[in-house]
Image (cartoon, rainbow, N blue to C red; front, side, top):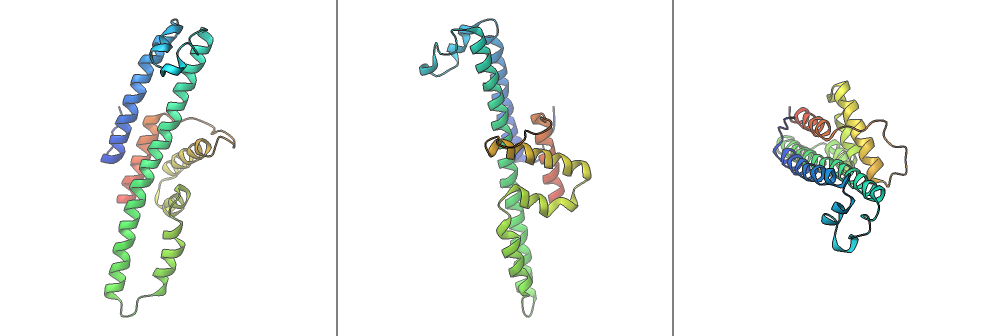
Length: 183
């Protein structure tokens, strides 16, 4: 099992693992027992997928894939919330320090706020801000996660990612990036 140090990310990851565990146990029952699907779907879907085993298995596979994709979106959203909050806190501290200690505050900080802070509402902006501070391997993994997240979030209208990372590897990578930002 992977260790996640950031409390908020760890809590989200634990919820995702619990859902994945429940889903795995339930989907396992469907193979060889097509009618089992009627026990887990909403009432209006009863008898829709249970008539043929092939339909039940396809539904179960799509359900599993959808859960995986939603887990990626949830982990990245949690990561963004954590890192954006850290950046905004740090930026506010720096700005206050300059205003309090400079005879005449530099316009540079206002420009920086406009160009950097204003654009830091997307994962790509955050990655650009920290790219020189991460190891090559960590930056590559973070970029892979970003590409996968974009593929899912933007309607799968681009090329699918080359490889799918496991959820624990995604969570561990995001946690390592948070630790790098904090240090």
